[in-house]
Image (cartoon, one colour):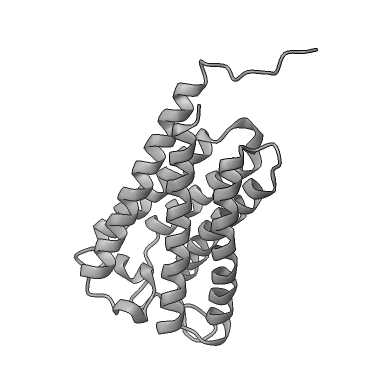
Length: 211
C-alpha cells in the first residue's frame, strides 16, 4: 500500500507566514476604513462606504490606505491557500486587483451610480471595481466550500460565511437597482463587507495555524 502523501515541510512556513500577514492586513485595513467612515464627514448610515474616500475629506488618505491594506490581505491569502484551492486563490488575486483599482480611483461627492444618479467615468470605474472585488471574494467562498479536497475547517468557514454573504449580496444588488442610495443599501453594504472581512481573517488564521 502506498504511503499517504505528506506536505513538503519547506512549503509550510512560507504559507503560514503569508496567512499571518494576510490576517494582519485585513484587520488593519478594516480598522482604517472604519475610522475613516465613522470619523469622516460622510453621511453616516445613509451613504456608501466609499464616500469616506472622497478627495476633499480629511480622512480620505486613511480610507485609501485601508483599502490598499485589504487588497494586500486578499493577495496574501491567495498565496497562502493550499494548492488544491488554486481556483479560489485566483479569485482572491483578482479581487485584490479590483480592490486596488477601487482605492486608486476616487469617486466624486456622494459616489453617484446609475440608474438613479448621474455618474462620472471615475464613479463608474470605482463602483465597478468595488462591486467586482466583493463579488470575487464571495465566489472564492463558494469555491472553497465546494472543493471536497480542501481542508474541512476551511470548507466550514466558507459555508458559514456564504450563508450570510449570498443573501446580503442579492439584497444589495436589488437595492442598488430598485431603491438607490440611502439607509437600506448603506446597511446592507456594511454587513456584506463585515462578512467578507470576518471570513478573510478567520480563513487566514486557520491556514496560519494549520499543521
